[in-house]
Length: 369
Image 1 (cartoon, rainbow, N blue to C red):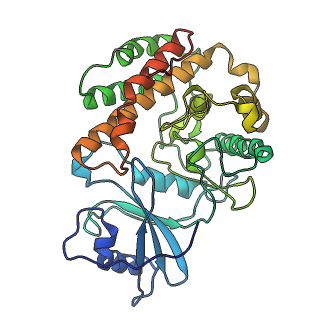
Image 2 (spheres, rainbow, N blue to C red; image 1 turned 180 degrees about the vertical axis):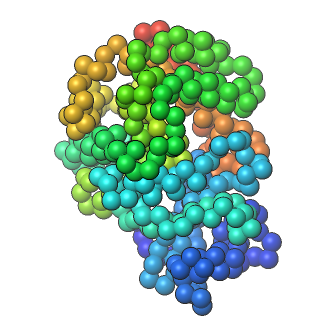
Image 3 (tube, rainbow, N blue to C red; image 1 turned 90 degrees about the vertical axis):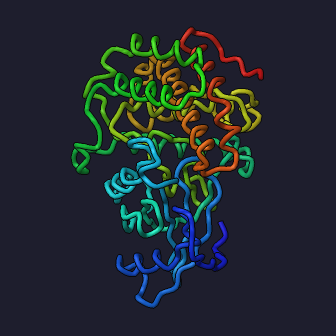
């Protein structure tokens, strides 16, 4: 990643969340937080990517930060959506653990500063791979990057959340029952028209939760969106230096988190950045079973524990992903989506739900248009 940031100019009237247009108030706030001297100057650059919370790269003197903001004022968002406050809290809790995270500096819930709530964290240099096929990595090195990802997820699931002050970060049981209800409500609140596969999954999922999966025993910190695109790797070697985008983190079930991570092996290449229709051996990328074995090795989990419940975990996550995509579609219609491809991504929600229903029925997803 380059380190040059072009100065931006402050406009008299700027929309909520437009950091470049509200540099005066942001600079003053950062001075009160001890991040900038009283007479400090700040420059900002919008960072590419992101479907949910827009990010800005800031520079003041020799220091650099990343600002993560909500996409709109709280009054315009669904309750609990775009929970950057939760991101800030979990990042703070994970400092100095085996999970690499950027160091957070300050949280601002006062929308008067830039029009939306936000937090500031240290900028971490490194490489982010939008494409899980890792086109910029040598073929014989790609497996090591996937092993690093598995090791990092296992490290997260080993963190003692009680010791880290996260007792109230989520409920300790009923994880899947609760989330099936939550994402069903999200789907119903954002749909333009009924999606048959979603309707079927809403009935099927509660009746097929694996035994003890809703109990307290397996509870751990879950990232909620753990995939290659949300990992920052060392600039030169297969080492995760920061896990990004914690908006959906909570206390939950490790296999739910792992199955979301494994969705890449069950979706096609393209805008959703899957691996299912690629020649993985030729690319040097592990198969799903090899990746799951690596996670089990790093976590100390018995591979047999995945067992017959794996189709449920995959179907649940495709159901959840389809609901998330519908939410992106709603934001696109409202003009608050953070990515130019939001409409195209949101239109895939019915197909994603269909893949989930196929897996629930023991079938292979059909990726044909």
